Amino acid sequence: MIRILIADDHALIREGLRHILKGSPEFEVAGEAADAASTIALVRSTDAHILILDLSMPGRNGVEMIPQIKATNSALHILVLTMHGEHQYAVRAFKAGASGYLTKESASGELVSALTKIAGGGVYMSLSMAERFARNLHEPLEMLPHQRLSDREFDVFRRITAGQTIGEIATQLCVSTKTISTYKARILDKMQMPHGAALVRYAMRHKLFDDSEEP
Image 1: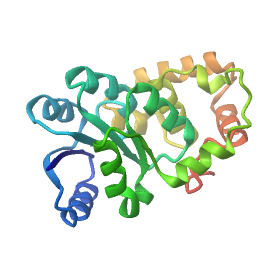
Image 2 (image 1 turned 180 degrees about the vertical axis):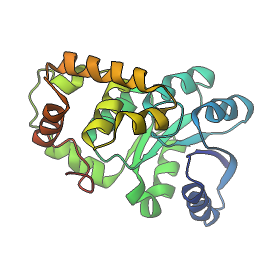
Image 3 (image 1 turned 30 degrees about the vertical axis):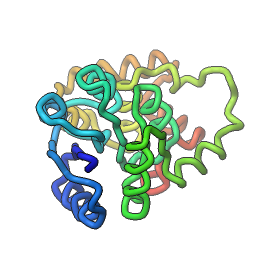
């Protein structure tokens, strides 16, 4: 029996994942969490083989959580399940220690295959993400401005360019507006951009939007 943990702040998503896994008797949902703190507590207290991890839970960026989770339980495999379809998120997740990356739009058709592959020691990427990787192989080898950002800075950058306000980002990440303003200033400095509108233009030029959220 392959024991699965689910970490997602949306109850409907967790319910949907449980429903998918009920059709596969080799999987058992051993626990659930709805934010960063409860995810770490769950990993520490529950024996499992794979953690399904959302990147956008309250409290902490998911990519930042991956090394902490692996430090807590090095044997636990992590399947990132996210709405973020950009290949840059996937690159960061795999570098942080994830074993798989699956977009939520692909979950109904690929979740069981992904978990089976990861449980066997393999690595899994959704078919749509693999196509995005292939299309971006022409990118220059030198580091682009957004690639100089830390994982948290990149997350804030993406939220800004998606149209979220400083207050909205602060609420979702459970930090102060001052903290997010500091991140924004740091992002502008690292990317050598004069203002937020330039960040949006940059994101559009480099196709860093999901198709569904491009302005």
